[in-house]
Length: 272
Image (cartoon, rainbow, N blue to C red; front, side, top):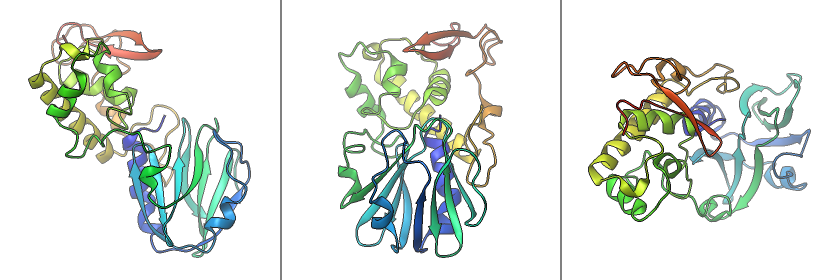
């Protein structure tokens, strides 16, 4: 599933090519995404200029002139590619945003778990974004914040990192990697972790995400960037997907358990 690094990689790849371009039309081939695309959305967006693209959590925000925004979520298997508008669509290409330049942003999603929404006014007030926590790479995500949020809570450390109301965009892969770097066992109660250890965890989250963005995200199966290239952070994974292998830090054996139906990898020797 595309997480924050994959979405940010997509944003950076397409933003220079679409900023300042006018939307000629939007072609909807299949409106049956996670939420059906509104029938009048293409008509609302057509002939508006794209001012820029922002990212909030795992959402791409196409900021348009006249105070409007297209909010796009890539879902579990979605990708957004820049193609020539006349290129014939392949299977699962559900929509095209045709630009006046003759290029198109083509959204492809085999599982159809993504979504596209129209918003006027402040997109931060949209119901999908209003209750989200801080961005993990921002100054609002720090040790005091995470420590205070965790007090008195029985939720485990990994679940706290993956709660979008606490902090956004940290998916399963990156939660595993950050907890490993911070030497915190994923199932440890969040309320029992001290501030100094949260400081290490915050730094680990920021470094893992920054490195993943630098590497173009992580491709394990589906993800490709806006040019069709895979992400290469999987080459740097230290714990995720390495169940039964030796820990690179202490030579112990990495274990895999399931927490909340998610595969969870950790080293019992150096994570506590």
